[in-house]
Amino acid sequence: MKISMIRDLLDAEIVCGEENLERDVFSACGSDMMSDVLAYVKDQAVLLTGLVNAQVVRTAEMMDMVCIVFVRSKSPTVEMVELAKENNIVLLKTKKRMYEACGKLYACGLVGNKTAV
Amino acid sequence: MSEVVKLHFDVDGEDFTSAGQASVQVKKILRQLGINPEIIRKVSIAMYEGEINMVIHAGGGYADILIYEDRIEIHLVDHGPGIANVEMAMREGWSTAPDNIRSLGFGAGMGLPNMKRYTDDMKIDSALGEGTRITMRINL
Ligand SMILES: Nc1ncnc2c1ncn2[C@@H]1O[C@H](COP(=O)(O)OP(=O)(O)O)[C@@H](O)[C@H]1O
Ligand SMILES: [Mg+2]
Image 1 (cartoon, each protein chain N blue to C red):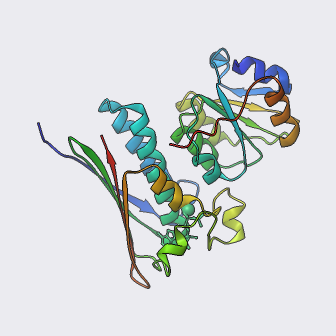
Image 2 (cartoon, chains in turn green, cyan):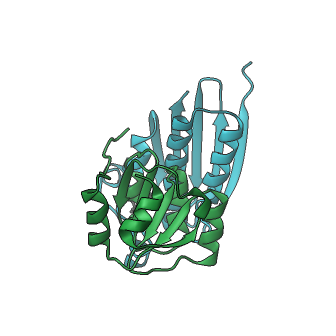
Image 3 (cartoon, chains in turn purple, cyan):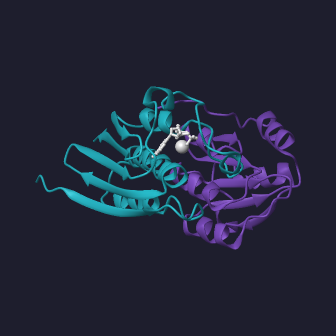
């Protein structure tokens, strides 16, 4: 699924990374606990979260994730946007809640990838 | 060629926001060295969890990364409170992290298990009141 489609499905606002909207995403993960995110390797994944702090972007960076979606209209800080830009991570923000946002993406074929190393 | 690349980082225990910066640096350097991306991801995640632990549980410390021809070693050393029961600490979901840390996205008790999962060998030496030394090895 392309990031632009995620944007459309979630009616999301682009915070940064407009130039990378045509990149492909193969799996997704929704969590506010970063260690749960770090527990599974995902290839070109998107992270959906309601958590807002710099560790969210660092976690995505460590996992080579390509996109973060902030649910419930949470706004990333300036510092987070800078970190994301440095690492070519697209930041999106949606009014939808976690459950609905994950459900929409899942229903449209973006499954979670639970392959542990 | 059997030259060893050695990296050293001090980990500041005061600032949760900047925690993880050493791991970010290591990731950059491993990329420059042309290491396989899968390996880089394992090293980054293991070190990142360890670095976060040093900040939230031990007041900071230091990290030494040694890159050999056949392996990468990560040494994390702190002079924090130590781990009372290492076997317990290794269990998934076991955590002494306070609620304020949990609200920051850590403290799910998955850090040490993650570190073990992503490395080929992991050793914890810890003494109460003295500190903790964690050694991890990832084969190349
Ligand atoms: N460097 C450390 N110094 C002291 N205690 C530690 C250290 N690292 C881990 N611990 C202890 O081990 C527990 C489990 O660690 P971990 O699996 O990373 O989970 P979490 O960090 O989410 O609590 C921690 O809650 C803490 O009690
Ligand atoms: Mg931890």
